[in-house]
Image 1 (tube, rainbow, N blue to C red):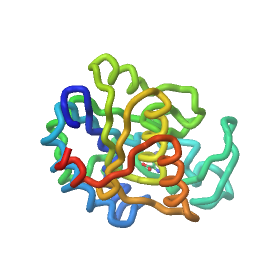
Image 2: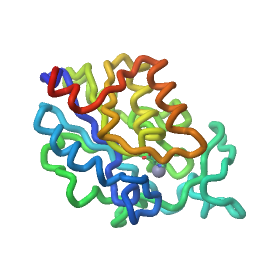
Image 3: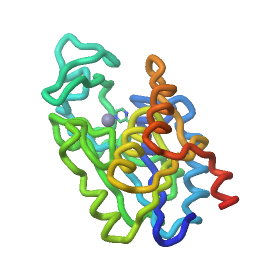
Amino acid sequence: MAGSGSALIVVDVQNDFCPGGALAVPGGDEVVPIANRLMAKFDHVILTQDWHPGDHASFAANNPGMEPFSMTEMPYGPQILWPVHCVQGTPGAAFHADLVTDRASLIVRKGFHSHIDSYSAFLENDRKTPTGLAGALRDRGINDLVLVGLATDFCVHYSATDAVMLGFGVTVLEDGCRAIDLDGSLAAARAEMAARGVTLATSDHLKAA
Ligand code: VGL
Ligand code: ZN
């Protein structure tokens, strides 16, 4: 499973998504040892990093009168407004200090256009603007992806379903992910991933493979 045609993608394991961070995901730091352990099994390790400018349109603080976790309309459709998080160059945007980053051959930054959010590591929330990751994977002959990271119901979910749509084989290791879970978003994301052909598994599945 983890031969040269497959890659481990570690999604957004950043301080702001870990306990104490600006958009803390419950148990977010618990994925760190799992991600680190998995890296040894892959020839290709890719990290993603949510990387917003301070004036990002997805921040409630940049939308007068709006509260974090409320909904708004962007030109590209509905968008959840978030607390200010993962601002470029800040400690909150840095990887968790215990995440091993040395084995990563590619770090994909996303969400850097002020007016477009990007949950997916492949396509921004306008569903049109590519990040370049699909081309980089194809150039390296990578067809199969294993995803872990944060958050299951947002960036992992969108990355996984986009990857299937783009023709990759995709497995999400659920014990290596943690969710924000806004209004049932975890159950919805799991159902959507399964319906779109993402394999939901756990990291011991990889040992057996
Ligand atoms: C994420 C909300 C906003 C994520 C990023 O990494 O799942 N969620 N930005
Ligand atoms: Zn973000």
